[in-house]
Image 1: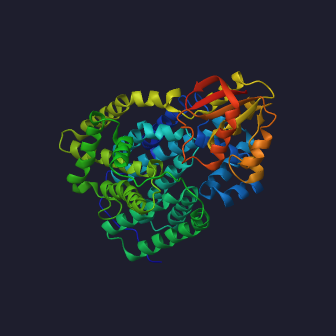
Image 2: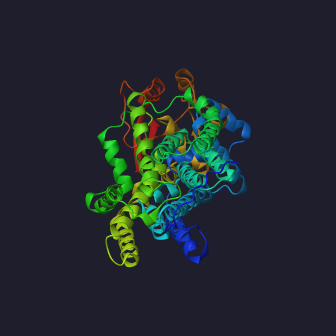
Image 3: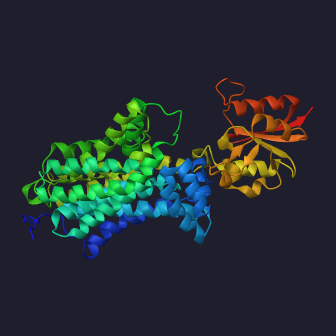
Length: 502
């Protein structure tokens, strides 16, 4: 058997064993989980989380019908959540996998830094990752993006181990987690370009390339059916090609919301690229250092998605969240390299890392508080449902302006019990859609003939009677000409009006 293992000088990075290494991995994981659990149930389901809640509570047949028609890209995640909600249908349970995934991702970031450099580098990188507000934000949302981040970080760790050791298990693990990440969201496959760049930079031998190509091909093959099905489904029609504002927003999400917060981390990240480690710090294969691994991970996935989106807009910040570990690893490597110039290193490195983590968390503490406040969720469907519940009376009719306004009824059906959803034709489950299908204008006119009181629920910023509104929405508004507005209630992101027939 041909071996790919390389004999190298002893490096500071050590295998993960013993109490010190356990702390290196566990402390970032526990920090990320604790911040994820902080205020986890303080807000209701968002509009996007409602889609997960609605889809995951359907039967397998209904979920298949939904995925085949409108939401294939999220189908595997919905299927995963379906099994979880079968045990306990609860909002907190719906979000717990994201919390756990971010805890795992933080542990893996620490493990990567430890293997490529030193336990202190791993600890610093893991802690920086754990305290970034974007990590808490997606840890508290019932979406697949935290799980994608954990899978992508696991794939990066397996890549290192596969390059270090002559064991197929690491490459099998690599293929598996990349495939899962691709199933959860196709954008995760951009990770493969980053890993290919790393292998190019270290001049990997042919047998490593062969194993990587086989693993990457397997992952793409597994994810291909989802990508093919989603290709023909309509996406958001209002997306635009990302420009400078999208780039600066991504930088703020990774480095900090303001210059004075971001500056220290950016300086250390640049320092990792401009300084060299001492010879005693060799990596697992010649030339494989933290910057060589982290820089492609940080740069290539966002850059490629930006480029593609100039022709076919598909960019969203959350789609490249898995690149964040690259930035944290670069910053930690920069701390180590700059601390090398200070004597003693054993004091300068941990002190600098601790101060930077504390500064990063303290400088963004206001962002953490905001993310857990009601104001951070303008589409809090629990608040909308409570507004309807305290305002409407049994046997009143309700009319939703804008298809997504039915989200509150899907997420919290008890608040809408007894109300007549007068425009609804087929329920979400029966129609194979997230929010149901509505009556044609002529049928809606007949259904409204005997209605005396109707509550109209719409977005707080909805503009009436514009030619750009769909014909069905304009038909609803035309029917209200026979009514007069008697009462108006508002909540975050929604407006509820009572109309009484003239």
